View 1 (cartoon, chains in turn blue, green):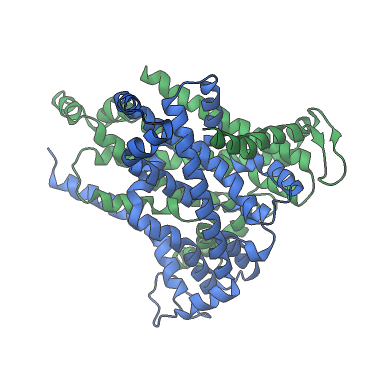
View 2 (tube, one colour):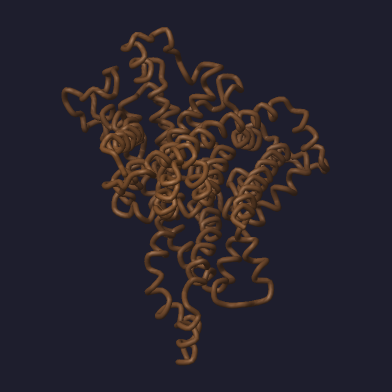
Length: 273
Length: 277
């Protein structure tokens, strides 16, 4: 029943909106490659490519340090949150215990809780135990909120696995931990990967928490470095463009390989904590 | 099970409770806090700055939530009438703004809105130079400019969500409607919209929360300025707590913001469930 005109119209819509999504990013890339002192519309292809802008921005913006901090924090958060979420989701999804519904309800709050609401006590409490100013000040709160989502996510997965599978394993005398590791986890690979990808993205893109917790330049994360760079060199457009791309690149690379997981996770209603 | 909940309780639940507790005190972060009861909240209600900030949130909701959802629905409805190939590729591109760090997006859009940035240059090139202005430095335009960025980030998400949802609607329903002589409009309200109920709730929750809690974008693009013309609640929390030392007042705004977010999410998910029943 589809007419040719309808099909053309549909593809036109898709293409126009896709271009609209890409345009600012392409403009940014072209700007990052133009001569440092030139002014102009970003959508004109520069006559010569100035990859040197990236090197300059790397040094002035101290992005090497930023990327290292971001990587350390992201790896730690993903590792902690993944292990704890699997255990938590396993407990909530397969076992009955007193107060399990209360625990579950408490986790639900974490799904939508914004850092904006907890940042003040986090700062003062962590300062008292001297955890601000270092990686742990960002890692622990980030991991905690990611665990709320992760537990929720893994619980849903474990609830969907057939109970007969669990009972069969239990009759064979397998311990709870053994059932988890050798029976359930092999099936859970895609779900776990989606969870890890989302946790990575949220942690990498976080700004407020690092802004408050990391005043020391030697541990600041990449997005924070970018914001500070922008504050200091507002007019250095090429440098800023290069810096923005450096900061965004790791997430874009992961996205390029695992975009199915990003999209599936976010569409499931996962709200960044 | 226990370690997960332990970490979560200590670093997420406890601070939330502590924030609510702090909001009952008058405290500058250094000297001992003084009990203030609900005084901070009374002050907030009377504080024009706070009211402005929350009003700005409403404006942002229009840009972050209402417009992308409307556009997404309209396009999904149009696209629902045909089978499409190459959808994965489009999906990946449309979704891209979601994954890029907000700070990088803010830097990009600051450049686009700059006095001699691409937006003004395009306007001048097509003979609309009189409309060119320093968008982010303009009292009337700073907030809508930030809002436009939100629309840009969110419309792809809504489109991807709704297109996925539309494909789950049985084609038979559409065929039946067409046999009955339903036009595109009838078809949209009778089949597409009810079929997308779940996706609609997810889209509204995601976009409303990001509109309400928006901090990164405003902080990097305008810092709430010029004046207070693009101030938002999350920025007030930060500025009061960490720049003015009005910790109690900041905690009260943060708690109020969290309550609004919880309430909005609760109402939306309930609405979704009720209509499903």
